[in-house]
Length: 284
Image (tube, rainbow, N blue to C red; front, side, top):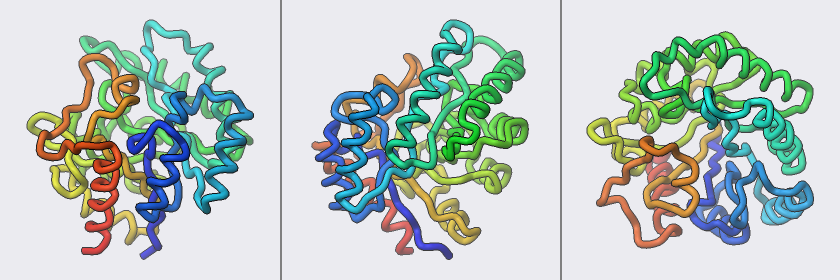
């Protein structure tokens, strides 16, 4: 079994990179999946800022495992994909400045009232263009399952990873639960294409987010099976308390629900509790 490498969305502890670093060090993490820095989304920061952020992270003995980008979180019918592709290319440049080997991305918001299969060809064409943009960069685009997008369930995630083999997979148990997808079935189908896990759990009844191992996402089994099969990379994504950047990351009508008994007084407290939940699973 490999030695787990644990990262986190540390913007859930603080919007400030200096405080994010403190949170990672306090929880003995290896680094972060960087999403928001000093009030800006990572895809929007200047390259000079990226260099400064990299130096701070490196000086602390940490690394950037992945760019937690919003790439692919646009409306497939209404938003400008050409412009979005330019954002991806710039995000690849930022990833290289941060020495990150991965960019987390998505497969486009679809109209809620329409059959997702109507959009398959358009989704695949766009993902091929995105993969082409990343070709030769040394950065892997990693597709995350997410509610409201084409790749929300296991079957369509499998289609994506089969038809665009340059992509890798990110497996988020809570997001599958929120889509009504059995996570063990999803894991059985997708495990061979998963590069890393998002550690987040949820309840089927209302989609509420709970600490890892306290929900219905089969997180302990998936973590242990992933490690047993040679995986080692995991990103803690707490979502245990509404933080300043969350609402901007979710579409209206798709917001995460937070289980009341797991809402904490401070962002630091929620972040530490999420990290502790994963540590408890690993210690079992």
